[in-house]
Length: 193
Ligand code: 5GP
Image 1 (cartoon, rainbow, N blue to C red):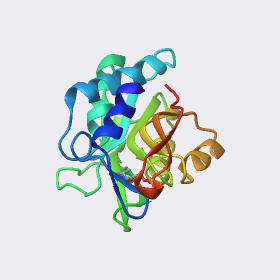
Image 2 (cartoon, protein in one colour):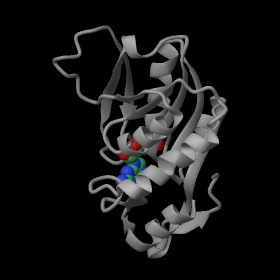
Image 3 (cartoon, protein in one colour):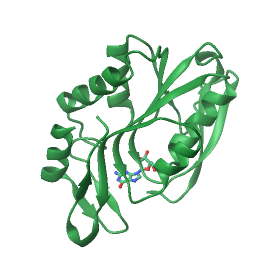
Image 4 (cartoon, rainbow, N blue to C red):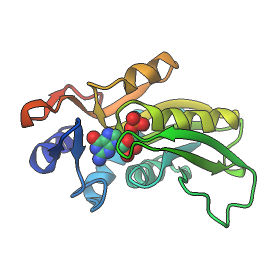
């Protein structure tokens, strides 16, 4: 997606350890116009898949997932990282190791929001080692829901996430694919959409 790639070139900052900082438009301050375009692109790609729910993980997946859900005319559910006092229902839970924070956390969704009738599109901001997406797939599987695809805003293709998800039989659609963050430069592969 050209707009996204251009924005990463302009405003992305490379941190050590293969981390890309995009806090001026995705992960802290959010550009609603770009997020809408991203969400709508995912909706276009999965328009004929019969999606009934868009599932993401708090916090930075919410903006693109919400716009995709709006365009697909289905609800968006975000998995929560901290158990809220108001989540008193039965929960679907899985553990996710965070690449950036280097801690394992439990993520959960109330069982009442996903069922075996659902066809799910999972959306997340980054794909690195695939642990966040895998955790979300597990939550969907616990509910008996089908996962039809995974929409990623920024894939770091030099890490193993895509291979892990494809081995699980998942269709991965990444709008920006980064080949390398070495030597202070962002090198891109051709994106999927
Ligand atoms: P994974 O579970 O695929 O290893 O990592 C995905 C999660 O880690 C994303 O939800 C995102 O929050 C975070 N993440 C991974 N790599 C990066 C990165 O380079 N930059 C930022 N900002 N977040 C990242």
